[in-house]
Length: 304
Image 1 (tube, rainbow, N blue to C red):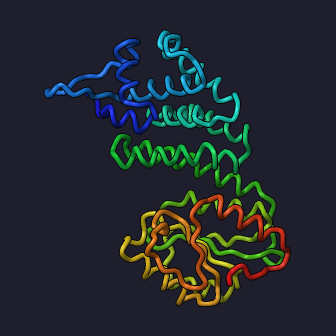
Image 2: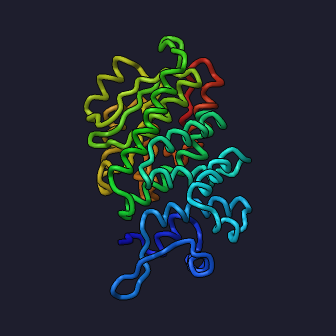
């Protein structure tokens, strides 16, 4: 039985529902089943096929020709798209189709191709982050299971750790020092790992404390390490009504250390920031900050 509605397919593929219906009726692209109330539902193979068809059509292929391709020919054509131009939709869709199928070898090939083509940071920004956002939406609405989401997250985490390990060591005595951590109970680590890579690649020193750190531990860390700044990402922790209290506790515990905040829970208009805190709305804002600081060999204040 299918588990996707046509609106699910529209949201996940970017193809309008009326276009999906036309492709289904005219070209037989999909074969939905119907519920007892005559509502179309679609299965995972329908979603994978639609993603691949959308990839080729976004590249200018005619739907009448695409509809004639076998599954193998369709996958081969999508793979070739990943080697062309700077339109990243084909790579994202190819990754998404592989994730739905839990095709680990194909995921590895697609990720490796993106890294080789663009380099680590550009691949993360243009392909892997958009892919992760799509996976997150699918997990949120229940159209992929936890095993599929974990497979994707762990593969990308492995690539991040390998990229960080490959960077040359920067002595803390010769660099601006950062403490990166996630609050207690927070396990969404990929954004923080990318920040660690970006800072290290720009010759900053990073004390990476990772997941689920109690705030009370930071005072002793800062006293010993004397960081230029603290940085954290708030994705699912703390609870929304506790974010303000959490930020105030951070500032109170570390009153003289700049604090950089990123993540969905930080993007609230009503959040009142302490004088030492900076809200980062986009990852590119953080990269711009890291770039500007790397131009100055000695630590300088960036907060008024």
